[in-house]
Every structure is written in C-alpha cells, then in structure tokens.
Length: 479
Image 1: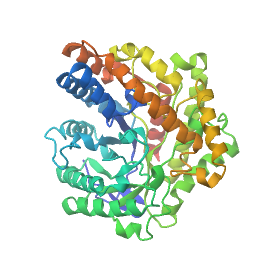
Image 2: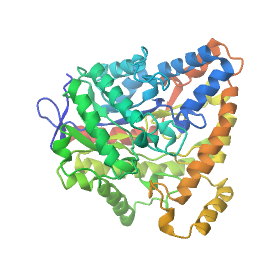
Image 3: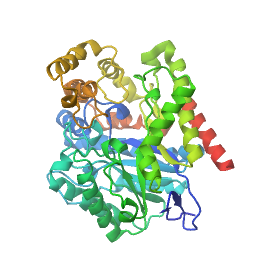
C-alpha cells in the first residue's frame, strides 16, 4: 500500500512512522534531454529548433513525442523494481508545461507523459520524486539547464522566478493526492552567485506556494553551487521549511576519466572519498536535518572508444560504486544514482548499438567523443593541446589567482570554464545542424523506428552496475 512519506527529524518515514530508505536512480535524458544521455550535441532547445527546420514542425513534434513514449514505459518500471529499488527521480523541464512566448499558460499536453510514468512506477510499487531539472532562464550554467549560456539568468530576472513559482503551484495542485510521489525536488543544482540570498528567497516563495495547495508531500531542497554548498542557508532551515530533506550531489572524482589517480581502494583514497561526502552533509548533520543524495555515480568506458581497456576500466568504476554504497548504507542514507538509461555512458540500461538510432549516429557520436563536445565525464585527450593555450593565455594575463576564481569556483576552475565555454558550448553549437541533417527525407515510419531505439526491449543492461545495486538492495532488506 502506498503511503504519503514525510520527514521526521533526520529520517524519511511513512504514515505509520516507519523509516523508509529511498534507493533508486534518476530518469534523466527524458523530460529533460541531455546531450551525453540522448546522443545529440549542444542543448535540447537547439536540436528541437534545428530538427523542425529540417523535417518540419509536425514531423519534428511527432519524433520527440514518440521518443518520450518509448524512452520510459511500464517494462522499464518492471525492470527497475526487479533490482530491488524503490524510487525514481524524474528530471523534468519547464518547457513541457509552458512556452517562453506564452508564459504562465499550462500546455494541455504538459502532464501527458509524466502522468504515464508516475502511474507505471506506482503500479510496480516505486515512489517518484519530481525534479525541476530545467528552470526558466537557467538556474546554472550547465547544458542540462537548456539555456545555451553559462550565465544563470534565473537569478537576475524576477520574471523567471515568478514563472517557476507559478509552475510548481500547478504541478503540486495536479499531484497533491498522489501517494506514490515521494515529493518535489524544487530545483536541480542551483548556482546562485549571491551566496544563497536568491536561492533562499526562491525556496521561501516556492515552498509557500506548494504548501498552499499541497501540504503533504516532502520538499527536496538542493544546496547551492550544484548541490554542494549549504553555508548560506538560514539557521532556522528546519523550521522554515518543514517536511523537507536537504539534497547533496556526491559525485566522486575516482569514477571519472580525469580522476587524480587510479582507484585502488587504498586507505587514503577511501578517506578522501568519505571526507568529500561528509563535507557536503556536515551542515545538515550539525543541525539534525534530513539528508538525501539526489545524484551520484561513476561513468563507464565504452568498447567502441576504449577498446581492450574497457573491462579493466569498468571493474575499477564498479569498485567506486560499491564503496560509495557502503558509506551510504552505514548512514541509512536515501539516494538516487545518476542514471537509469542512456546511449551507453552511465546508464543502468542503454540503447543497443544495433538499433536504428545508434547505427545512424555512429560516426557523429564518435566525432563528439574525440572532440570532447559533451561536458559530462569527457576525456579531452584528443583535443587538450588545442585548449591548453587558452588556459595559459588567461593565467598569464590574469596573474592574480583570486581574479580567476569566478563563480561557481571551485566547481568550475579556469580549465573547467574554458572546457564549458570554448569547447563544449562552441563545438556543440556548430554540430547541431549536422545532427538534424541525419533526419532529412524521413517519413513517419522511419521516425518512429528511430524513437523505438530507446524502448526497453531495444536496450542492453549494464550488468556490472546492476549487480552491485541488486546486492546492496538485498543487503538492505536483510538489515
């Protein structure tokens, strides 16, 4: 039986006050598409505009609707449940619900696919968390905010903030009686340069708006600077935002190509991993607040790119995954790994190379890989030589290190900023039309075949990852 969940001090509990530890994954790349997940360059709004130009608005809308239909359906929920997991964090974009040129007018089809996903999960006893991954204007400078710029304009335009408060009111009103929704993640990875003044104000307004129509669902509140920093939060956060869990994102550098050293499970490496995790949650721990890990997890090598080293690399990444899970289990931490499904880089399930989509874009995807055109987990070994002079040019001409620490430092260093702006945004923008041109001359049947590539039946399972998740779920049941 479903039960409205709530926060009781440091725990999430059901209506009988029994603790519920949420263990699951993020459904990214779906109602917020992402380049490394869904296999395109740049931002979602750019490829939607480009595809409409190439095949027309009607066919373009048909393809994207079929993509949403096939990407997540009941077989996905059934598979997810079979691993012993109980929660899916659904990343959504405001663009599905309102149009920038027609703001504060709810699109009639806005809840179509989200309703279907929530119902499929509910049927299999899976809670969902609704995550506003893409806010008007962009709440951070990431591609996943779908703004096409590194400036987080959400924080400097009040109208963007007003629109998101309006939208959360509509979402909360729509789902206020749905027990299988665990709660609302009001904003993914905010990057408010005012040291939380804008973020706290937004949380105040959004929480009040949601509570006016829905007093029961849990609020999940990300920390500032990509869910890592709570230092600017108010001391009365627990009383100010009751029934709330505070969300960290706990990615370990050891799970990525640019790790400082190979992960060998040394005592020092485990200490560093644990310390990184503890630093993110220590503000909440000092105040007796509930912590939720909304994103974490390694990325994985792909045989078409890493060749014979693929298995060796991935076995190390599974050890990172396992050791992080062991930390979380000791704290009975609720978590949502990133990511459920993609085209082969991080997902628990991934689109088979034999599908129409993967075949069509094989060369395009390889070029993106070699150009490191996607920010997430990119290995820039083939193009590093082209960008190092830009980094050095900045350092030589801005010798004061403090002047180089532009927000969101330290998440973005000089190297990271150059990578985002000069490499990923720029290169991705120039590859968008090439991506769309692949669709030239296609009829509806061919478009549907491409979209069907993302069906669960056409996906492969990342067995090493799922084995670790299943083992920890079984141990949790025993304990």
